[in-house]
Length: 369
Image (cartoon, rainbow, N blue to C red):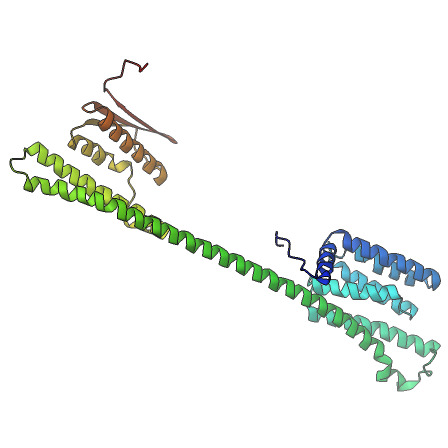
């Protein structure tokens, strides 16, 4: 069911229909209607008394309607009790007429069985009741009908009850099935609209990510690429450049190119919204710590990598997080403790990965007062 409440409409008729629809959807509706119909049946039985079987059939027919929503199959009992009462008495009470309609509607509304099968079962039950009446007319006679003799019992006019009851059951079952089909169509339409809305939101988010990726590329990629180009060209354009300085410029250019590759990978993920770009360019892992430490040494830092325990396969998210931690720690060491010796310790234990990065840089002894 939809969580939103439909608009009742501006007209009085629309508001009344909306309130009536809300009331019929409450759990109290079947109990109330079943109870009212049972009270009508009691009054009718008091005014026109019948046999015990007739009274029992009428009361079962009306009382069973109180549970028709929780247990739709009770409609079989409702219609069966009504036909039993009619078959034993010969006069169908008004309460059982309404009960037959409501029970047949319930069976079709909840599709307890295929509508065609329900109508066939109703037609057979109606024919059975009609045959009981024909047998009674043969034995006892009936007001308004001639005494049946010989082949008169096969006259089509005697089977009008079967036709009428079948048409009644057919109409009620068809109406219930039509209401069910209409509600299913409305729910399917609402679900399709919900899926369409989610698709539009997803497309809008992808468009926004693509816009952000394009802006990041325009703002950052150009500057990083210029750093790589200038650092690399400095080794060729600067006369009498010392060897260590040339190596440092080459290292700067290599770092810039690595940053560009990383930036392109991240922007690819941002544009696509999936991990396909990551598959084309693998994410960093602990296997790349040696290269990371070597890069730190190449720019003038002193670093040592120490692995404790036997290296085991870890989830990709663990390895990426540990790699980023070490990368950030080495960057901070170069920035805040230049010349200090940095020790990177990676410890493997069952179910545990420990990362420790320390350096022997100077400690600030004076506190700012």
